[in-house]
Image (cartoon, rainbow, N blue to C red; front, side, top):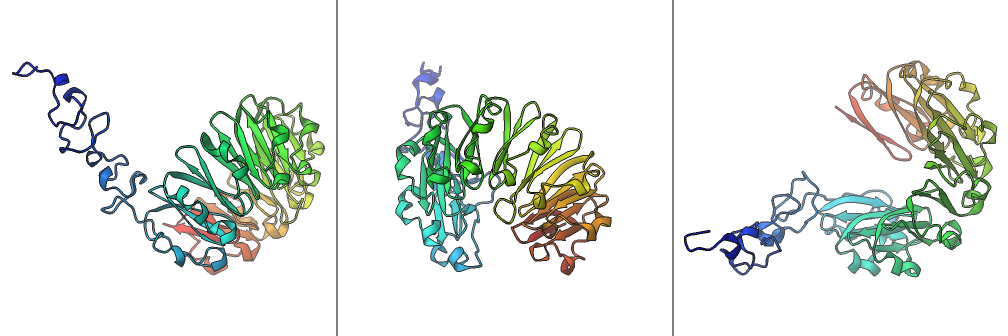
Amino acid sequence: MDADGCSQSQLDDDGDGVMNDADDCPLTPTVEAVDDDGCAPSQLDDDNDGVMNDADDCPLTPTGEVVDADGCHGGSVVTWGDSYSGGNSSSESSNLSSGVIQIYSANYAFAALKSDGSVVTWGNVWQGGNSSSVSSNLSSGVTQIFSTNYAFAALKSDGSVVTWGGSGGDSSSVSSNLSSGVTHIYSNPNVFAALKGDGSVVTWGSSSSGGDSSSVSSDLSFGVTQIFSNSNAFAALKSDGSVVTWGLSYHGGDSSSVSSDLSSGVTGIFSTSYAFAALKSDGSVVTWGHTDNGGDSSSVSSDLSSGVTDIFSTNGLYPRSGAFAALKSDGSVVTWGHADYGGDSSSVSSDLSSGVTDIFSTRNGAFAALKSDGSVVTWGSSSDGGDSSSVSSVLSSGVTHIFSTGSAFAALKSDGSVVTWGSSSDGGDSSSVSTDLSYGVTQIFSTNDAFAAIIG
């Protein structure tokens, strides 16, 4: 109580309508609108970038970013390559000059997310590069973007979804279900599947590849926690450990032959292009889908009945040419699927009987196992990285991690050197930069056909 007999709950010194005892901003300028705590936009900095809300053009700046006077960090975009596929962004140059925090891609287009929650698109106009039809919905509030091969789906902070582009770009048939509550979006090349906060799933896109989930709609109405996909089918994992599948039947959309095994206990799902493998809490594995693509594991069923801790896969360069590799708790490896693309590891079986700590793969059909002694074992398609005989001596020790393109591997060693093998056109031949890769490499990145290393 002051000298006039007034308590803080009775006083409003800055005249903002919030009494002193509840006013977090007691010096609010006259006539500024305030929130329940008595604070005006000129007194708040929600993203902690040093620019107050009323002057911040980019209110969602990530923590730690250096920003300009408008509250936006650099975030400019440079593009190159095939103009048809997004290499030419000149039509959007002004919108891409600042504020971009993330870039997403489909096969032939890009979508940039800016720190103010808006989206900028360019590339093939029919396959996601032109978002003019939904531009008003993409002007603010977007938090993340997902893609099929030919379309985009933007998730907004209010849980709604905005779509555009080719296959998967038209969600009008399910628009009412996408107006709120969506927490994550999954996809295959032609279909989107949205997971909602209540555990239900909404699908759209090519009906035969999973866009039509009406046959399992009751099972997808609650309890789903995660969704997995391959080229033409989906598998949803539910909170009770059961699995629901839909999409092209012989690519894994039909799991009726193993339904009893998928009714409980599943903890993770893995895929090749046309098959799925489910890992259960007891360490067993259940497979279904195209038999030549890993859907049939009967030849190794006894080895997959217990002890499996993780599963890896290749997709194969050609249809139905994928394979799986299961890592067991004793450090051994079990493989199945297309024999030529990693499903047959008999030539290196003794090396895979113990000591394996991790497995890596090229997309097109080879595996590389890293062992606890730092050595590497490879198998699968020889032209896609399965044959490492030319560098076997330098892969006998010291390897700490392995990276891959579609058809080549790059091994990073503890001394900072790099060893490569596989298709020369996909990064397997690093002879032109061998001196640069002989020491000091700290990180390696890859596209489908090339590697990039950070030195120092």
